[in-house]
Amino acid sequence: MDLSPHPHPPKAVEEWQKSGAKMIDFIFGVNHTQYWHSLNLTQHPSHYSGLRYLPYSSIAISRIQDSLGAGAYFNPYITVNGTMIKYGVVHLDTLAADLSEWRTLYLAGRLQKPVKILRDDPRVRLASQVNLISALRIALLMLPERFTERQLYERIAGLSYIGDPRMNSFLSGENPNKVSNIVREQLPSFRQLYAPLIDNLPNLDFNDSYTPHNISWEKEDAIQDNGSLLTLSNVFGGGDGLSLQQDMDPVKRGNMVQRLPNAFRRKLYYQYKKKFGIPSSAIDSVLEAATDKDPHDDLKLREGGDFEPRIAAQEDLPTVIGKCVRATVAWPSTVEVVKGVFTSGVGRSWRYYKDKRKRSQEKAPSA
Picture 1 (cartoon, rainbow, N blue to C red):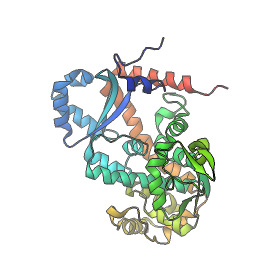
Picture 2: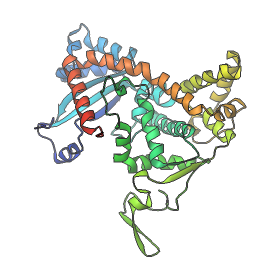
Picture 3: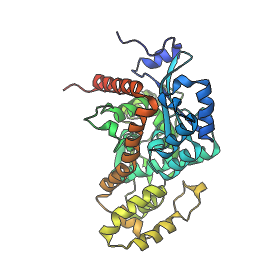
């Protein structure tokens, strides 16, 4: 018998668990890492591993958090009011930087999927919009001219798992179908998150007569069409959602390249520097020119130079982007996995790994 990890779960949690979910994940953005851990260690010492016994433990824990990996510190298997949670702590500066610049994609990747914001912060809100539009642009640069919503959202949801050691088949820590499962179970939520951004991009359009903008898909279960009753699943293309089409013009796609996050764009430009025979000094000039933009008006495209359309026209662009994503994700994710053994404790880490492995085997498709 598979017992619930929640001792006395509320009804909403019981319903939520039926999908196989075990813990609710939280991310806490804080202004002062050491001070936050100092208070939390006093109030909830059992949340921490043996690191709490170190001299000046709050200072040690905050330094481990801020200086290693992606700048996060996770405490799993914490029961609060009958509900089991895992919570991560991150400095707001680290969070905003990853969202806007994609330094590690560890945190930005989590916020490219539907999440519930419990307490907003203006700086993070702005950086989150930059993160979402950047994820949309990267996905478009990796997709063909025509594609479905499901293909788009799976591409977006899968970005932060490229290079993640937990997705390695040898480790088997994650369900190999995790990305497709996330999108299948939350496609309307992805649509609600990205449809307004799709509407703002001049080189991308829905092909279907019904779009998320001309019917109230969030509230209605069916609509009338020439006297016939159509369910929303039919209107939105069933499991694949709506179909979309993008303009493959290199100049327009080059504008998207120019608007990618700074840290990520630098990796991409240097991938093509050698291929195009461009000296490093010239690449630095291109990067400086591309950075000269209004960060508060990121949804609007600017005309790029000659370098970006050349990149956009390359047939190997999806492959090269994948390499850049892997280079961004792999090291910080690996460090976070190793760091988690110490921050969560060996016992909790082993339990977490076994739970992940069990769920991945339970949901793996049969041969």
